[in-house]
Amino acid sequence: MLKIVAAVAACGFVVFMLFNNRNMKTYNHFMKRKKSLEESIKSFTATQQYANQNMAIAVNQDEKKLCVSTMKNGSPVPVVYHYNDVIACEVIEYKVTDTNNQVHGQKVINILGDSVGKVIDGHSGKEEEERINRIDLKISFNDPQNTFVLANFLLWEVSKDSEEYKLASKDISHWYGIINNIVKKAS
Image 1 (spheres, helix red, strand yellow):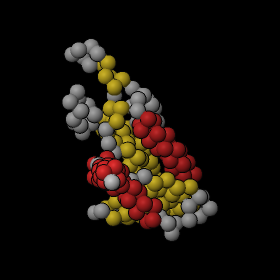
Image 2 (cartoon, helix red, strand yellow):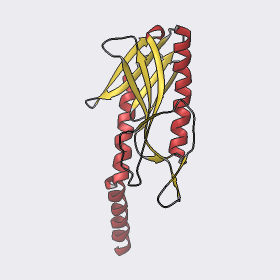
Image 3 (tube, helix red, strand yellow):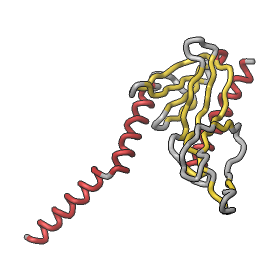
Image 4 (tube, helix red, strand yellow):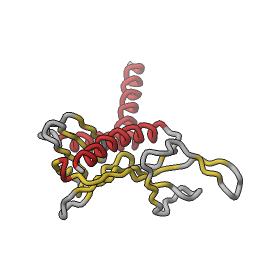
């Protein structure tokens, strides 16, 4: 009997820890946001699509339309444009610029160059990993009401050597290529 009580208590403790773990809560929050964004573009017939916890993007190559959904005031807001209304795109990386990992608002536009970088600390002479805390795909439209959308592919601090950065770079490179081809064909 004592073994059964101990086993139930241990299982209860494990379940409690899993559901109250901050990482699990964060993961669940991200997954709910991703699902909400995916649902927001469900009615758009896509030939290619991508979604994360910050945005969803899709194209319909047959109808020549682009759909981007981002969160505004806690709700997904999809916008749909014809290819000829898409006028530009660029990749924007926000670097962490000091050794205390505080952001100084430096914006670095990186059109798919530098995949991995190191910074030399001038005071100690030691090498530090270059850190990024945000990567966006800025898509500009010929629309005075909505001139651009920032499709966010990464929104937390990571090293340029990390798998998260490499995956986000791969995904944003793919979508930059798609949007850039749309812009070139519309010109």
